Length: 331
Image (cartoon, rainbow, N blue to C red; front, top):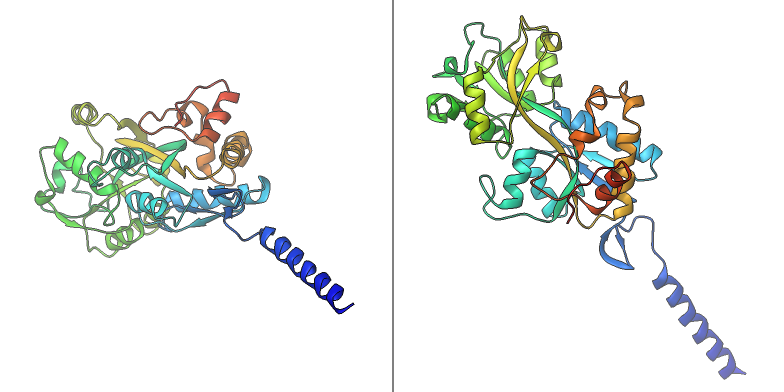
């Protein structure tokens, strides 16, 4: 009898171990049946600084998907496009906002990147990020007027630095022709308010929170680029496009003519096809009804979303756009 009881206890213990080992907790970020595949239950979306459009819009996207698409997405503060790419590579995020020029640099291992970073794909392009040269000094009317001035050219490691370099170069200038400082959007706005700098390069979708806040206490001006220099810039760096910021955005004296790059969501290749498909569907199928949640929803279009050529699209995005009759290149 003792032997029978011992055998039964042993069998019970073995069965318990099998059951325990086979369980998968809701907090486990990986799929045990598919090692290396990120679960859709807890995605981290690295955005931008708290005063920028990336953070504000990214947080809204994350909250809506979490509430309505059955995907838990947490929006987190980011330190710029370059940093966001490395957050993906280092496993600290599964989704990231990035400028279209910086994502191309990363994928090809040029400019800001010493070697290619290819762990990500394109989810979608969302809107145009305008290069905003912001000042409260009415004597600064052209890029040439920045010579010898204290100018913020973006946080260290951000794509704003290269945008500033490109525009200065188009006007025959270099960083040595200005007195550069390296600040975030919010810090740049504070420095302008306090008279510590004369101008700041801010590359983000307009209206940008930092500039809007500045405009409540100061008379803000944006520096326009002229047609000749815009054409030269685009010829040399075709990822730029000409765009206009209406005078109504910041209550400036006139419309501002400038250039912009695309704001793109990147996604790690390890995220499942189904999850990425659901994210795309949640963003674009609901865009028209969500403009009151964030104005940027009103700028979304499937044509622009599918326009990226430099980095292939994730399989989930390929599936979503195919349902809309649009073919995009996938990995």
